[in-house]
Image (cartoon, rainbow, N blue to C red; front, side):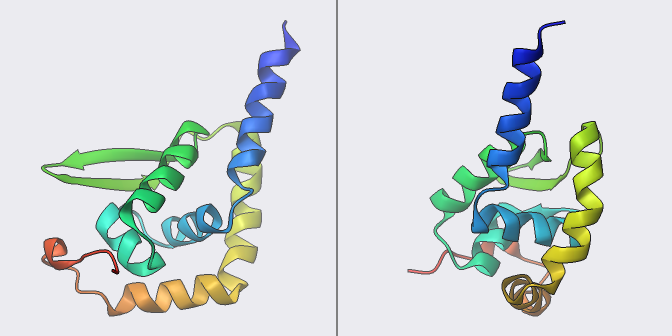
Length: 124
């Protein structure tokens, strides 16, 4: 068995957690079943390009899956996580919601309308 690809995958996994925005996204998606990119943009108060780039990194590392619905892309936690990710999910569930940033993000999410996502726009 070649151990190098396994180590590279492990490095990719841990690198995916080395960003505050990505941790904020994970915190939101661990609380919600699924969120549209437009909601993540509104809650995180970041440009759509930034949010999309961070989502791609998390998806590439295996944390997320996406689903297209018309022009909307919805993200959720991948239910087929690897062993290390399965080990880390309870840790993330316990510690991320306790952060000030995650609490503020969840409060902003609660205030957003759940219908008519098209009205949501990135801050200018």
